[in-house]
Image 1 (cartoon, protein in one colour):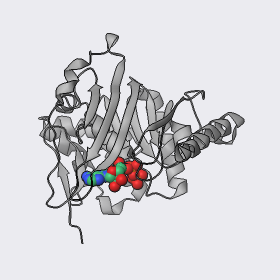
Image 2 (image 1 turned 180 degrees about the vertical axis):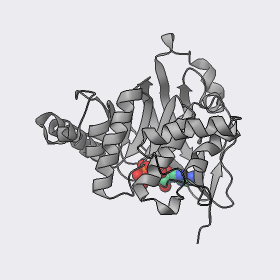
Image 3 (image 1 turned 60 degrees about the vertical axis):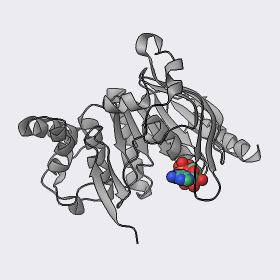
Image 4 (image 1 turned 180 degrees about the horizontal axis):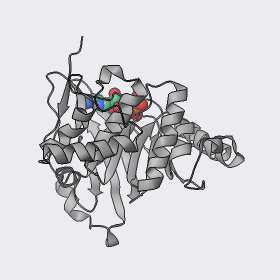
Length: 298
Ligand SMILES: Nc1ncnc2c1ncn2[C@@H]1O[C@H](COP(=O)(O)OP(=O)(O)OP(=O)(O)O)[C@@H](O)[C@H]1O
């Protein structure tokens, strides 16, 4: 049986469930990073050049990612989609400085992922909401803000504002176990957004939810992105979710994960769920499906 610990990293506010007693991985900078120049005009949020990841294991090394090469611009909503085990989470962890690269180069906001993490560039939302069960909703959201050095009163105001943004006004005094899975996930989104990260990292945030809840949260997330235009990196297995939410879809192949196709969405930015019944949506979903099939045949 695995024991889980909900942990909040004091330097980057990453709150996640980690197997106890495995420590969090805080890798050092890659010496190759100095070769990349910061983006002109600051418009590039993420720049990845020929990145690879090889996990060293007790038996054979696992080649998780190979030749990953793409950019993410500020304000883009980018989904990573591909078969199970193709390296989506690894790629997200590389961008967020939770996994070192074995080769290549990565820049985030013009600096190394490590520097970006220390500058608190990231907000994280995982499949499991990773809330502290003994803290109420408000106290879960205020925790990283207080670690950041905000006063209790300031942290409360900021947390309340973000809880309102995700539709949880009035639930501040509830405990996680008194909320539905979808509401818990909205608490973790409010927490991730509360310290205004430049990039929101979401790893299958709605994967454990029923379809109706998932649809509703997709719509709310879309509206939130629409209002804030924050850069989002989103991992999903769902073609419909990727097509509905993304401005850019990165389709990956089975291991070692490579990029099969990068699709810039032709859909309008202002979206509602009815869009999923349109020919344009279906054409894009078809394109993603074909790219996934191509990846399997390579
Ligand atoms: N710490 C690790 N040590 C060794 N191998 C690992 C480690 N983490 C991931 N892997 C392997 O690397 C590959 C990519 O894993 P990753 O979790 O990134 O894939 P994924 O596309 O996110 O999978 P899923 O869709 O099932 O969540 C898999 O084969 C996995 O077994």
